[in-house]
Length: 449
Ligand code: ADP
Ligand code: MG
Image (cartoon, rainbow, N blue to C red; front, side, top):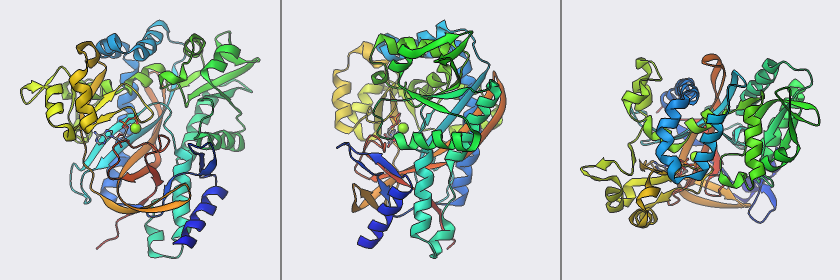
């Protein structure tokens, strides 16, 4: 095992499968040595869902009055969502093209290929990360299992290429010689190598340069020139958000002004602020109602989508004739409480959730949704964190990356481009890799028995 561990660490570091840890040291990203098994049937189902969900979310993101109507309650209690919604309301149409780089996250509820065992955790519309590192974990597993029967069962994965191709399409559509990509980032981002790979590949494959800036920096240095978003006269064809999804990314009024400036410019946004809001937990909960869902997608797709939904509630609804918050307090192991936040570490589980619900003032309730807890079957895995192995009983969450490029409601590109697997110890509630809970993994097909 020691040799194998060193092989994995050396490979990871050589191939950029790295991140900055909590002690601010550069090290390998948290990873696993054993790929997660999946049946081909379920894998195919997930892949087929990507363009359907993309289309749905783009449509929802364009429907401003729908977003306003359903986020109305949230914004009474949540300043962050209110600010985003108010920027959306203020900005007119500045750019018909939009780019979405999505990640649709699921748990499987059984290990077999039975129907309806695919359950959605959430659909990410902004800063969908790990497109590069997840491809590198697949390569790592190919290296570790070379010549063994498992090698041929590993599921190929290279989301980076799909991400970069879609971004290049957007820049070419902007059609301005010498224009760049603006990557909106968090200062000191620990997962910046996953972002750097996109920058380097865009330059290498398409000769498109990228500028990395925080919202504060954009507020200071960016200017609007004849509608273009510019830095020192360089035009930003595409603004790609890897930040801007949490209040921490807006430390000052200047940062909010920067977001307004971006939205009022003709730069193509990835995502537009409407599509960002379409990705909120509240809208996820609202779309759980078939009558609402049917407004946005053809009837034929409805069952495919709703089969992946677990029950979701607002706190003022009833569950089994009891107020939802009361039921969740009585059965804390059955629900997850979620605020309108992204990035991991924001949800409440178990007794902590019950405690919060018991003391939550009524006016705060609208800012949250309640989601049925998904129980994923456990499997054994070997996790590698900070150069140490740990054999653990784990659960795994699979995300499918997608790209969707649109001109208003016309879809120009819409496809699945690969996957992310995050494996975590079964007793861990939260799941993010950046947030420090989970390890990167890859997929392998279940061998025919
Ligand atoms: P975020 O936007 O912060 O990533 P998520 O909705 O993805 O929020 O939740 C974070 C993590 O919490 C997930 O990766 C998953 O591990 C866990 N989680 C979220 N919802 C559920 C659920 N309904 N059942 C079980 N675990 C969940
Ligand atoms: Mg998530």
